[in-house]
Image (cartoon, rainbow, N blue to C red; front, side, top):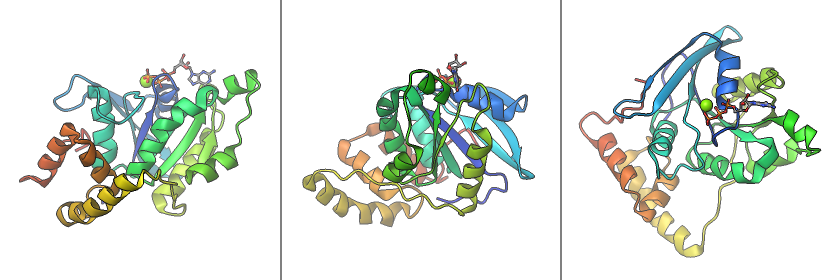
Length: 238
Ligand SMILES: Nc1nc2c(ncn2[C@@H]2O[C@H](COP(=O)(O)OP(=O)(O)OP(=O)(O)O)[C@@H](O)[C@H]2O)c(=O)[nH]1
Ligand SMILES: [Mg+2]
């Protein structure tokens, strides 16, 4: 994939109600605008922030529990992460129900390694006497993890610093990928070279192979557009 844009684009993903918009507002302030995702009735919110003299664009994705494209929102979030070429993706998870939230985090790290996990609502977790072992979580996921309380601004400088480092390649996350049953892995191993032959680096070949095995029709459609005349899927950014 890779991007030639001067201004890095950061996607903000996460389950509903995890504080994505609170974080988005805290980072972008008044520098934001809304519209619809092209051809969809789903609201699109984009904004920008400056970090170390560099302008970053932030895209607040719809809250989703998965990226399996069961709803318009899931499709929008998936297509942006998959085809929109964000320079990094922040996955906002709820510190008070981490396990449920990590499902989406794992799905996203299957698509892209350029991920920072933001464990938000850490103040709520503290109140409930829950302790988050940030380093262990980071080690288990293979991506940087930061704890935040977006409503009070706690942890935001650390988050911006990690995002900046991932964008610049100073941190190269190495997500621990889910290993599936041998039958699935054998099929994936056969498909990956064929996907790469057609799409090159445009899409993560392992992830796409898994989805093709599932028979995900929305994705086949998206890939057809990608390989079509314009080699481009409207991602809302362009
Ligand atoms: N205590 C606490 N509350 C927070 C924090 N971040 C967000 N909230 C609250 O959590 C609620 C949901 O926040 P939103 O920012 O709307 O969540 P969202 O992820 O954008 O939700 P969707 O757009 O529906 O997916 C709001 O009432 C926020 O004020 C935080 O760090 N601590
Ligand atoms: Mg929101």
